[in-house]
Length: 207
Image (cartoon, rainbow, N blue to C red):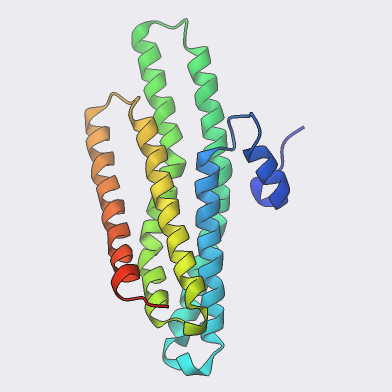
């Protein structure tokens, strides 16, 4: 029997699966859920901003951001399933290649680990692209929901940090110098994006 997509499970069902002995869902799905929650919470703040006449100058942006966060939330939920599936396929590949010649085994191993990186890479990139919207919401969104804006931003940061960890753990098994160099440069870009919103949270946002 095919398992339900994560988005179709109850919270308890997902957490039971996450807490079980099965290797997936694991950290990748947890990172995706962090991303989805960050977007949903930010979306709420957008609606509370767009419905408040005190923020009339920000209404158009708030509505625009609400649409972006809604779409991104769906992307993160899909990436949760993709990550779990890719991890299970990685495990199957590693078990299946033992009898292959060394060169072929190494090639298939590299391909499998690159595949395992795809979902966390997309999570980190998607959330990094959204950080300016989270930042603008922190500074210009409804102040009555400031704590929600902060928690949304912190959840977004946690999603990126978790995704970076998931990329790095798989990158260790990839013997491809160009790919490694490119990925490390990309990770630095994500980390810089996090540092920028961290600075806003530290120096410009006060409850």
